[in-house]
Image (cartoon, rainbow, N blue to C red; front, side, top):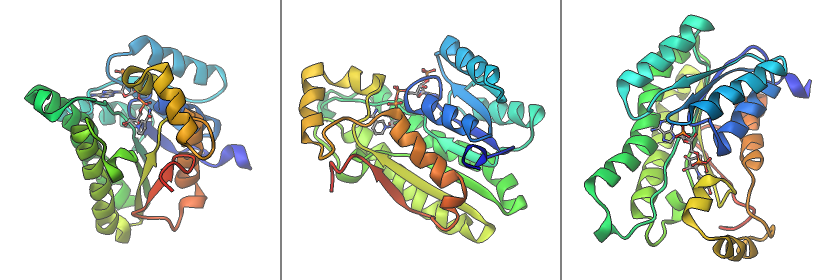
Amino acid sequence: MADLLLQGKICLVTGASRGIGAAIARAAAAAGAMVAINYCRSRNLAESLAEELRNEGGQAMAIQADVGSSADVERMFATVEKAWGPVSLLVNNAGVSLRELVTHTSEDQWDQVINTNLKGPFLCCRRALPHMIRSRWGRIINIASVWGMRGASCESVYAASKGGLILFTKSLAQEVGPSGVTVNALAPGPIGTDMLADELTEAERQDLAADIPLGRLGSPEDVAKTVIFLLSEGGNYINGQVITVDGGWTA
Ligand code: NAP
């Protein structure tokens, strides 16, 4: 049944208080997964999303953690394990952007982007993998970006974090594939979330949409549907890949 693709599976989505992560959490719950909604600062949004999913009959909890902190990541996984059991579906979605000239970028800004976008997925994978390997089954999806494939002016640090995440994905897929764990990345193009609204004006977003063969920005749901496909049986033989979800922008 299409609505039970992930029935009973324990799914952790990082950065799920809003935007793409929230859409992934909703789609995973609709597919029957028990969903841990990680957030960093947006407690109210994460708690109300968890409540919404519970009201719809699902199992969901909101958990605060900075994914760039190993202590926070340990506490987050331990909380899920105590309540439900070990995570078998991990979606590393939490991310921050930075649009700045390299000459104007501080060391703190570099650290924040790299810690969240690259160290975070490393810490979460490192914590999730022992159980996945022992049970010889697991699914990891890393949300990268088309900017991590082609780069862009004033996006050097962000692109470096996402480019690093893509090669982390490909390498880890080779490392843990023999243990039955798949690791894939998604490379979304411009998606209509807070992140894009913070970076671009409405006029710039319209220009960007006009450049995309499908004639519109992507929605968080466009990305979420691809994630659910990869997490479910459709993804059984897909490993170490970067799936571009950009309406043909980079085709
Ligand atoms: P968004 O609307 O800005 O949401 C970002 C999410 O990440 C929020 O839930 C935020 O939590 C969380 N987060 C940030 N720092 C965190 C940390 N240190 N620890 C835990 N959570 C943290 O962004 P989005 O557009 O949905 O992007 C989601 C992912 O897709 C990111 O990895 C982004 O790079 C990638 N992506 C986005 C686009 C796009 O055009 N939007 C394109 C390509 C790739 P709080 O609200 O609690 O702070």
